[in-house]
Amino acid sequence: MKQKKWSLLFLLPLLLSPVPGWSETSSPQALDIIRLSDAVRSPNRPFRYTVTIQEYKAGATQPDSKQILDISMRFIKPEKGSEADARSLVRFVWPPRDKGKIMLSDWYDLWFYTPELRRPIPISRQQRLLGQISNGDVIVTNFEYGYNAELVGEVPCGEKKCYKLVLARKLPEVTYPRVIYYVEKESDYRPYKADYYSLDNKLIKEVRYQNYRQVLGKARPTKIVIQDARYGNAYSVMEYSDIRFESLPVSHFTKEYIQRGGR
Image 1 (cartoon, helix red, strand yellow):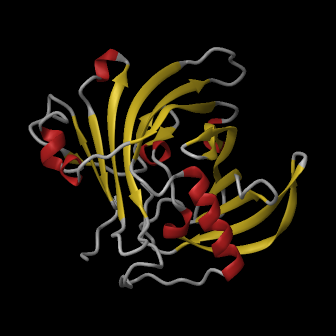
Image 2 (spheres, one colour):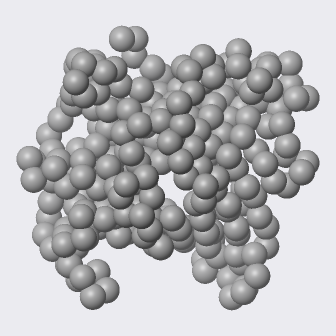
């Protein structure tokens, strides 16, 4: 397996052969919690969904902007001899001016294509997709792959109790150096909140997982609210719909495929 360079958020698991530079120092209990909560946010099979992103200014009741994306995911952890995979294909649906644009993620590499370009261009996961939303925000994050986890205690989460975990990135290429992650203790390890911090320990953004519904055989969040600390009281809402399993060949997750406009 060749080592990929970084460009969003998907990383190699313990079950793969060792990769240079990777180390695993998570405590057993913390690792179990992370794995179970990862399974809540993303099934271990290829799937597809629509995400609607709306941006709100401070104090506004109506969105300032709206974007709709059609996303196919091949995020698979190895089991029973299967190979790991971590790819995504993002098709821009709305607004109409963005029709035909495609974003491809292959492990740590990310490319963007628009019909005006001759070929896909590499981009970073930190670049803005829309307002406060970065490329990395729209694709499911797998914390087991990118972070070492430490369980530091239990705290109230509304009317429930949450495990509080401190996550430290395994490689400098991972977008966020540190995450404080809250996972519900008595609700099948549902993610409750994730706070992302910078190298100097400043809060960058707060992510809340909401509207749990039975989707693909499990209660999963269908709404994510992202508060960006650098934008005051402005926030973004990502709502997921039309979530279904899908079998797409690996050939669809290539630069050659998106250069043909995803056909």
